[in-house]
Length: 379
Image 1 (cartoon, rainbow, N blue to C red):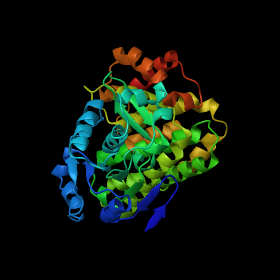
Image 2: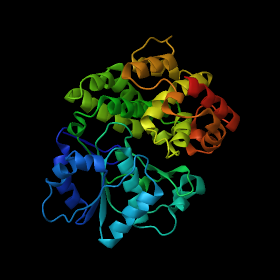
Image 3: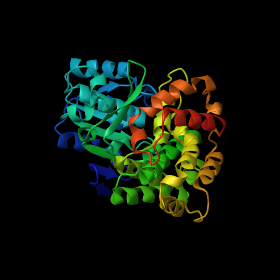
C-alpha cells in the first residue's frame, strides 16, 4: 500500500477506505460531517463506508450535493455542521462532493459571504486554517482529494474558484475498488477530466518541471498505456481502475502549476444549471479545440505530449484526442451536449475572466473565446 506525501498524506490502494476510522482519530475528528450525494446513498456505498467506523465517531451525513455544487448547498450543509457541532468534514464521492466539502470546511472557520473568498476577489490571501478535511474519491477524475481548489456556483450565478493551500485535505484516502463497476460513460467522462488536467498542466507556461513530469506520467497511464479505454471496456478491471485513480491524483498534483482555457470554457458552460453538464465531458469535448488554438505557443511540449500519449512525434494531438473521445463514446461537440450558439457572448465573457485563462500558454480575449466556442460547438 502506497503512502504518498506530494501534496498531503495520501493512502492509496484497493481497500484503503477501511482506514477511515484510524484517519479520523489521527486528526482528532469525533463528530464528522460526511458530504456525499444521494446516488451513493442509494447504491449502499455510504453505509458500507460508515459500517467500518466505531461507535465513537458521531457521524452526520449530508447527502444533497448537486452535480455542480452550489453556494446554496454549501450553506445548507454548513448549517447542519454548526447545528450538530461537527468538528471535521469527510468528502465521499466525485469532484462535486469534494468541492462542496472544501467550501463547508472553509465556511466553518470563516465569516462572511463565500463569494468574498473566491480567487477573482483576492480570496487566496483571505483563506486561513479551515476545519479538518478528509477526502475519499469514488471516481477517477478531478483529483480534488489532493488539490487546493474548489469550484462552486455562487449565488450570483457564476461558477468560481476557491483556492488555497489550506483547502488541501489533510488526508486523501484513494481506494480504486470504490470505482469498480462505475458505468462506462461516467468512467470515460471522469477519465478525460484527469487527462485534461495532466495535459493543461503540462502546457501551462509556469515553470515547474516536477509537476510537468507528474502530469506526463498521468497521461502515459491513462492514454499511452490504454488504462482509460480498458476501464471503460471492463468496469471490473482492477488494474485499470488503480492506474486511472493514480492518473487522476497525478492530474491534480500537476495542475499546481495552473490549468488553461479548456477549464475556463468548461466552467462557463457548467454554470448553466438548466443544462446540468458534466465537467469532465465538457473538458473532453473542448480539449481538441484548445490544442489547436495553443499549437504555436508551447515550444516543444507537443512532442512530450505525443510521447506520453504513445503516438508518433509528428502526429496531431488534437486529432488524437478527437479519436479517443469517439472511441470512449463521448460527444463530438458542444452542440451535442445542448449548448446553444446564442449563449456564446455570455459564455465568452465568463471564460475570459476565469482564473484558468491566465495560465493558458496563449492569451485569450473575449473575442478569442467567442471564436473558440463557435469551433467547439461544431467540433
